[in-house]
Amino acid sequence: MDSFDIAVVGSGPGAAFAAYGARGRRILMLDVGFDACRAAELDANLYDLRRRSDDLFTPLIGERFESLYNLSHRPISLKLKSPRMSYIVRDWLRLSPVASRSFEGVISLAKGGLANGWGAGVYRFTGRDLAGFPITDAELRPYYDELTAHVGVSGSNDDLEPYFDRDEGLQPPLKLAPFFEEMMAGYRREAGAFREAGVSLGRPRLAVLTMPHRGREPYGYRNLEFFQPHDPAIYTPAYTVDEMIGASEIEYRGGRLVLRYREREDGVEVVARNLETGAEETVFARKLLLGAGALNTARIVLESAGDYETRLPVLDNPMECLPLFRLRRIGEALPIHDTSLAQLNLVADLDGEVLQGTLYGTTGPLRSDVLASLPLSIRANMAWTKYLAPAMGLLMLFHPGEESAGSYVRLRPSGELEVEFAEPMRNAVARLIPLFRKIGYLSHRALVQRPGMGAGLHFSGTLPMRAAPGRYETDRDCRLAGSRRVYVVDGGCFSRLPAKNLTFTIMANALRVGRAVAEEA
Image 1 (cartoon, rainbow, N blue to C red):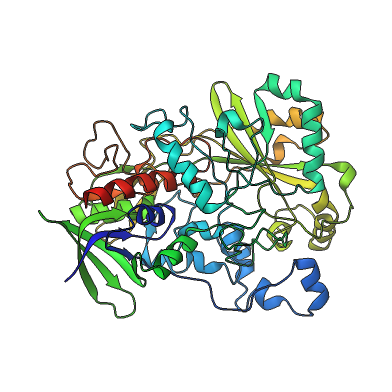
Image 2: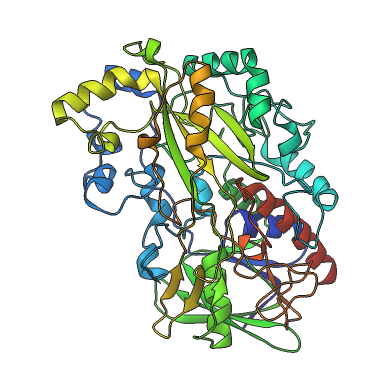
């Protein structure tokens, strides 16, 4: 039986940085590790590609009509369905089956996880965000700083600094599209009204380069986030995993689906299925770091305990989506050099609850992704989207995740993970409409959309970190209660879920845990 100091399960944000923190020990990373097909890259923005090529059907739509998936199936994130991006959620229902009436999310088994198609938002948790955690923002700050230097983060210290914390290592923010330049100008004019309403607007913190960094080139404004994987300017944990493989700092075994583990006095036996042969393989490690994602890590823990009864908690951020229209921009030419990444962030402190929103343009997705949701004929809808796209933005507003008896995961003897979410009340975004109207951006409460639970993809809290952990909880070092050698390094160990992207904090906490485990191993 192979023997290692540390075995790491998964390759997403938590697994990658737990391994990165533990470098210097003999580390094995077990991962399914799907990756993008080796097709020729799209080497220009869509405008130039259309001028140069008569046929973009294969890379944009796909031989199996992959990009039209949402027209005939339960919708998934637009970034997960195009031909070259669909690897991110390849075979997840077969290999990680979920049974649910309310779950509208997906699971990734790709190298780097769902962060291959993320919005790249990286936000530090403040002391307020970490209320209920047995660790503090001061403890995480040096790890955030190290990550900023490693990953490369663009943004600014602006009106959102009280919510994002100050970061002295930021690259300049991405260029704003004209729609959002005008929005920021309006916000500055009406700063008093926004402050009175408890609303702040500013630039997002993104793991996206605007300057060269560690051999990676800055963002090129090709607006291909929905179609082209592995833009070197947009960070994904797969880059760090590949760096560690290249430096022989870890042994990486892809094509392995971890099933369960058994803890012994001197270490942990980990059982994985080799997806090529179908055989079960067992490896031994002195320490085990579980970073398969909050849902699959919970699956592994419950399967290892033979527990098909216990309901574990689960969190996700409820969402509200609001389109915003700038009527004077109807019919304007679309920006040729643009981005589908976040343009602005909004933070709203409403009745003591802090909500965070992200503002996006609408020039990146295919028009087919919105045609069916409009009320006119297909021909009229096509004209509508053509002329309206430069005059439209989208606000995605996140609410804090809340524990509820109706939100849980439970493992069935069949291997399916039962995932259910209670449906919370979400009625905040309409309160922002009058504020945006003041600066010339119109909408209506009838246009508010509320995606189902799980669609936020911020799964967490299944094995939460506590000062005095009980069964299926973790301590401040993220060690599973009742265990001496098993740790949780993904979002499963989160004690609570504020209304912001959790990936940067998963990475910082995993780096902290990986470094501590390496000292003990």
